[in-house]
Length: 495
Image (cartoon, rainbow, N blue to C red; front, side, top):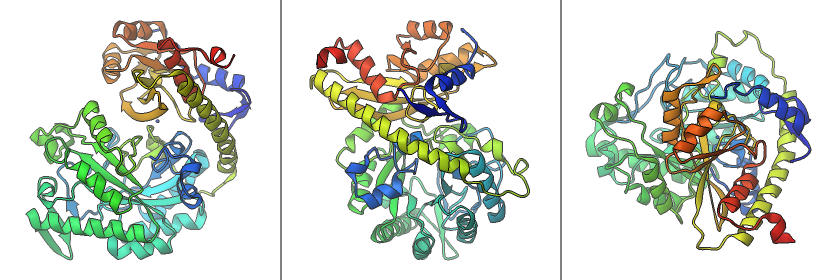
């Protein structure tokens, strides 16, 4: 692609060649990242709400970052998959934080992050307890941030038990995004997930607790929808407990107006200290998760780009820069400077137009060349954001997975792995983990890869391609698919 490109690591603007050289210089010297709807698919008011929200728009997650502040530690339910950990920098899952903040410190930290990360568009409160239950701290944090950064979108995550009392407060504060965790609509299923809930100074257990939680969650969803607040429903997929039941959950939340349904895999390991982890309850495989998502076709729109963020996550989805902004690193006095963010937004507007045009061309090329019966292909992509193939294979902590067939090129999921490139050389055991992560995929696109890992991947039946470095993902995936399927090249189609 020609024209000016802006670095996602900063705001230095220049030609593609300049940016490419800079990114390659950052590479390893070894030879050893919601709704995918475009603006034309939804009404303008809804598009305006979601276009810069990385959780509510699959397109936006390539360009914009989120930030969570851990100001709400109190929680009113116990989930068998949750163990809130404090002062923890070594786990990446919901409920985990390195430090808890006061509303005042949280506001100061948000300003510091906004000055350094121009992609920041959303501030969320996701605990580490429940943001609606610990409402005083949640409300005060939002008030302080809105005073100084009025263009930052505000959203919160909650289990819904305490939310109905605060819905009108959300309206007053211009909060138009809420994530509501709903793991069941059958209280019998809920008894296997929730040991107890706490409401109005009373602890409830068993079927009574599950029934009451269900009723409050449905009430919350209805109240939010009636007020025009967009709702993303999170559901944790727990094999043998609610996996098949989530089909019914999907239908019900669609009926009640949920904007997105995010079905997340259970994160379960003994070292996490959760009930499910200690009992040996396994999480779903990638294939099981995809099968459930496919079965939900026709129901509520699915979010497939979720990263199950920590309660203090900072950065683009798929990355966490929280350790760069612990309170001991945040200045005592910070003043917001909007210049970088304004420049970045201008670039994103132009880049989005170019990427959409490229994606439309790729879609048309695929439509013209691919027969309905042609087998689909899953292609993994190493990307740092911006909708481009712009990451070194050895630096990838995750791969975005795209499916291409007669319907075109579509994002389907991501697969997380430990980046294996450390200090300029590849660690063999970590490369094995990467190869395992890519099981079932025979092609990966990256900006650069060393000879040795390329050979190891080839031995595992995976072809690594770096010929499309810094191109848009959709056009590169389409070109690779056509080449691998022996389909006509673009020039031949249009000659």
